[in-house]
Image (cartoon, rainbow, N blue to C red):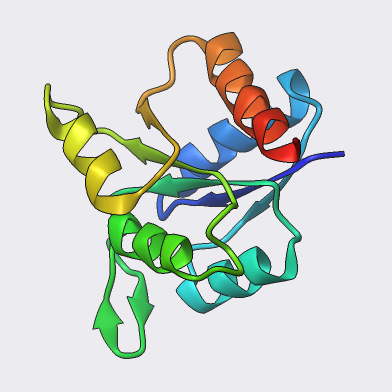
Length: 134
């Protein structure tokens, strides 16, 4: 069974994503906004994909405040976790933001909140995980 790590500081969003992924996608989910835990899970191979909220209000790493872009950059620059697919999730999807966020972070995909099309959301995740299995 595939596992998706949800990095999200809003418990309601985290619950919605969890429900869609488990019910529709038949996946396992983990949830944390603790950056050290995110890195630990990524390095241990316990997750097949990370859903990364771009604007993490409370996340700190080594005494600094970090957002989802920064955490994704950290994961992508570490050879141990660079291949793990990351999908950015944001509510502030302006035209052009998407490209900037993807370019800046090195993420593999992008989803806007709220998720309207649940099936498309699940399909995007399954596609990325299966492309990564090759």
